[in-house]
Length: 137
Image (cartoon, rainbow, N blue to C red; front, side, top):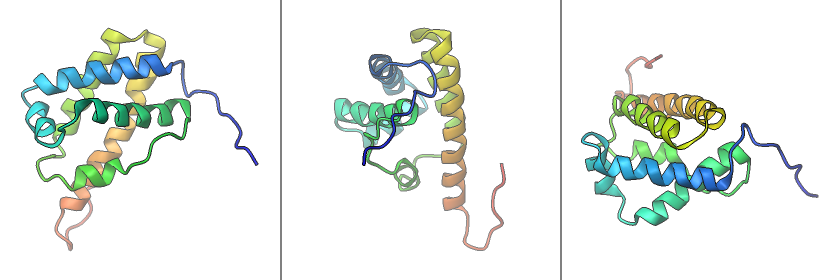
C-alpha cells in the first residue's frame, strides 16, 4: 500500500530549501554566538547541510527523507544553551527574508519558530534538576 502524497505546507522547492540551508549555515559559521558552538561539533559542513535540508524537506514537503533526532542532539551538547534559540531563530528569519520570496520566507520562519520553541523547551527541561518544577515558557 502506498502512502498518499501530501501537498507542501507552503510554497517551497527542494532547491529553495537547499539554498536557504546553505545561506543560513554560511552565516552561522561566522556568527559570534552560534559559530563557536557549531564549529566545535560540525566537522563536515556539506554533510550537515544535507542532513538539515532533509529535515526541512520532510517538515515542509513531507518527503519522509530525514532520519534523526534533533532534540536529542541539542540536549546532548552542553554548550547549546536555551537562550541561544532566540538568536538562532532571528538569524534564520533574517536569512530567509533575504533569500526567499515572502510567500515562502514568512511561513517557513513561523514553522522554524514553532520547532525552535519546542527544542528550547526540551533543552531547558533536560537541564533542570530532577525534582525542579517544569519550565513552562
